[in-house]
Length: 261
Image (cartoon, rainbow, N blue to C red; front, side, top):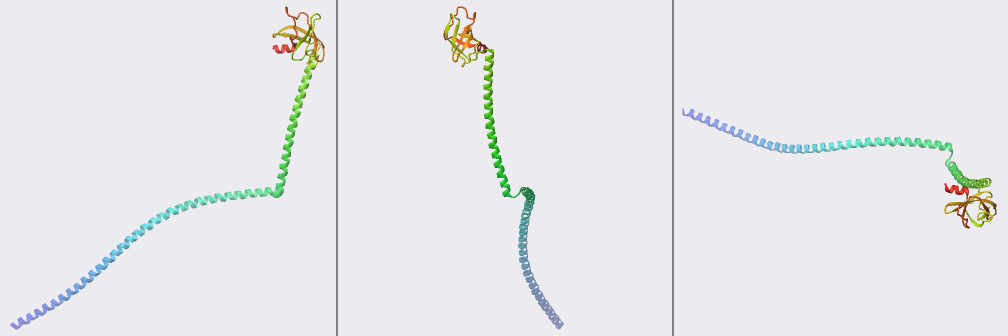
């Protein structure tokens, strides 16, 4: 019995020792596994931190790229607008160039019809000379015309004066402006006046003797000399209580009437 207990004890001790060995081995294995897991965890955490940093950098890069993309889009839009304006301006310039080319073509065709430039210049120079000559001729003609008109007017005035004098002679009207009594021959009823043939005294014409603006007597020219004339006092024309005096003013009746009007 004691042997059995000893054997059982030995078996139990051996089993305990085996179990303890197994437990120790499992514990060591578990410790190694835990250490490996912790190392892997540290590595994974470091990797995660790196990946998070990469992610943040990627986000920042993406945001920067997006910002640059927006700027590029704005620049592209502005460039497109500028290109459109440039294209429009280019089209306008092209159209204007085509119009200018057409004008040049027309001018060339016209100049071809007129001849070369030297010939055209000669024609223009000759035309200018002809125009200048025509202007000079016109100016000369205007001056001549003005002279002729002046002469005609002068001639017409002379003719008018002559016709008036002729009418005055025909109508026996003296045409001097005024004269005065030079001498008085009372007993014979006549006087002499200071106007003669050269002044416009006409034989047979009637004169007025004027004093203080009033007619005091009438005269009728009898004879006329170059520088004087004699005139009879018309009977009944001398104002009452009036005596003719040397120096009294004498005017033709027509002139007196005109002045009175």
